Length: 325
Ligand SMILES: Nc1ncnc2c1ncn2[C@@H]1O[C@H](COP(=O)(O)OP(=O)(O)O)[C@@H](O)[C@H]1O
Ligand SMILES: [Mg+2]
Image 1: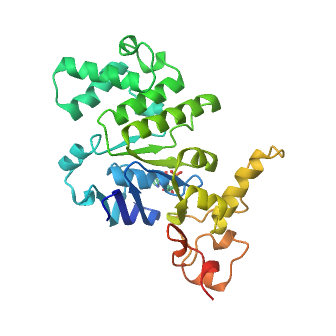
Image 2: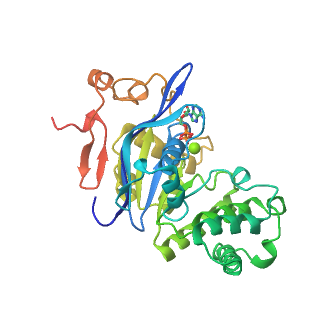
Image 3: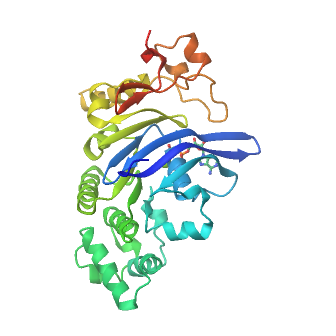
């Protein structure tokens, strides 16, 4: 990995071993993230984005989830080899995650101050007064007015947008090199969403942290990200600079996703859709996973998973149409 790379995920496989079968939620995911870079991970609901994030954090849900293969290089160490204790040391300080739903990531029975102080205590190991000051500074950093008063409030006394900012404050309080933001704005209305995205962008630029930004919304990718990885049925099918991917989407799935965003901005007013359903992750096709929905599918698409073909030195897509003839 080069010196600029802060996180490199190689051939990651995380499966759910259930009584009714094996769900291959993440099935061969690879990507790199450079210092100070924002990489979007985009794809329809259920394609494995959150399981990828939880695998990296080593916080998989109980009940059969296991990372069975792959490497996760963070600052030069494969954290898949870390003990739980080493992992606790890494979380929050080197890599941190802001969860999809602030309702579930804040505890309703503790004050905001108590929750921030607890997070900071694990990360700073400083004296009580210094921790309180750091907590207040963390709230101020996410534009929360009168942070001293807010410290004594409970989550239910705050708006959705403010709770989301508190979750953000907790996630970045240990100054991580990498922040994973999993659909951080899905629960918010549009104006508050925009405010939060702007805030996140500003924090990212001020601190030079790298962000893995997970979303199902290509519009948000265009606003936030430098590069984008498009995920479909447990695999990344296209990856490149946002400007390149928007200008020359090369996988038929990416084309369909981008077309659906453009359509939404038009006047039809209909929700974007792509014909057909993603495959069951318990029964993944042996060839290209998108073939059953793809207007260009040929026999080889159904028979063999395509390699990653380069479109330029930073842009690749897994599609047989790109094979040199
Ligand atoms: N707790 C769980 N138990 C069993 N299967 C799960 C669980 N969580 C997720 N999955 C499976 O993993 C797939 C990917 O889920 P997820 O990563 O949450 O998708 P998303 O891209 O929407 O974040 C889902 O389609 C589902 O089949
Ligand atoms: Mg998710």
